[in-house]
Structures are given as C-alpha cells and as structure tokens.
Length: 233
Image (cartoon, rainbow, N blue to C red; front, side):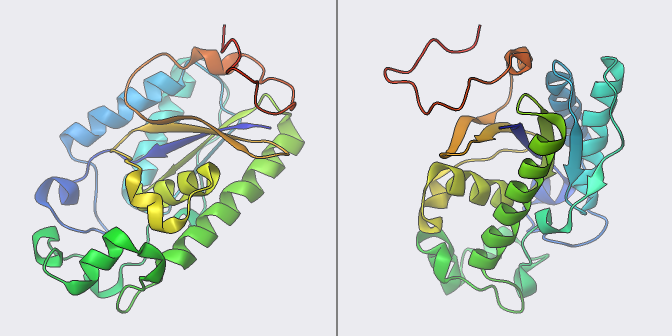
C-alpha cells in the first residue's frame, strides 16, 4: 500500500477576490499562494516521492513545480509532474467565473451544501461524476505505483478543494452528501494509504509539521491495530 499525499494548490488571485475560478484559464497563484506552495514543497522534501501528478489547471502545475523543486533541493530524484485530466477542477459550468457572493443567492447553493449528490451544475458536470472520476484515477494510480515501486512508496497528487474532499470522503467511507464536513485549505496536505481491506486516512488538511515519519515502511497489511497501535517512530 503506497502512501498518497493529496496537495491542494496554493491560494490564487480568484480565491483572494472571491471568484469561483473553475477551469478558467490564466488563474495563477498570488504572492501568498506561491509562498504556501513553497512551504508545502519544503515539507514534502522530507521524504522521496516516486511520482508527482497534477491537475491540468495552471495553479496546480505551479504548486506541483514547488513540490518538484523541494525534491530536487533535498537531493531526491524526481521527474517533472505529469498531468492527470481526471484530477481537473470540477466543471462548474455557468457558475464558473462568478462571484461567490452572487452564487450564495442561487437556490442550488443550498443543495450544494446539504445534498451534493443531487447537484449537476448548469452547463457543467454533476458532483457525483466529479467524485467518480477523481476516485477512480487515484485508486488506479495508487495500484500502479504500488506494483512498480512497492508498498513503502510515496507519491503526490496536486488538485483542487472539491476534488480532494471527494477523494477523502470516499477513503473515509462517507457518502458524498457528507463531504462538506471536510475542510481542505490552499496548499494543505492530506495523507491516505489504500490497503487491501480499506483505505487508511492518516492526516487531513495539514499546514505544518514534520513529514519525515512517512519514510518509515508502512505496517504489514494486518488491519487496524486494536487500541490504536504505537504510531510512527
């Protein structure tokens, strides 16, 4: 079971101005977002990464570059990030590019909060389809990376808030209608391991802290330890 680091892109100009960027081209990290991405890359540099994949949106590619720079700075071999279309931002359709304060007044906004499984964005995709494509891609990639590099491999996927929340909801066994209970901030790092019996969520929405414990080989796939176990050394 390889270890997956889910990294949200750093803050963007759209985030800072209250716009729903979606797949709008040209949305880049702002000054704070660039600093956030560099900090995430420095944290991940504590462990060698065998693969780095990213959403095709520019803000994610910028964040992935910061991760790759951190790897090179630490002397770890890493190829440049590869693009995974299935990790792209949700297609928000007609909502894309609009101000959040405007969208708050839409009747659909309440459904997005309370029953996202019933939401299809006008002119865009459904949140169910969004989750299905993202989860399928992550599980496919994780299985391939484990087969190629072994169960102690660590890899990184850089994506978006709703995408990462939907992957975490699946890993936690939560219905999509509960995924709004999960918070994923810009440049935060969440950690998941997919084992034969179930996924294990090791961390969510972390902003700081040492990640060198990920260098330790994961425990044998014997299920969850009763009582919680001893944790990483």
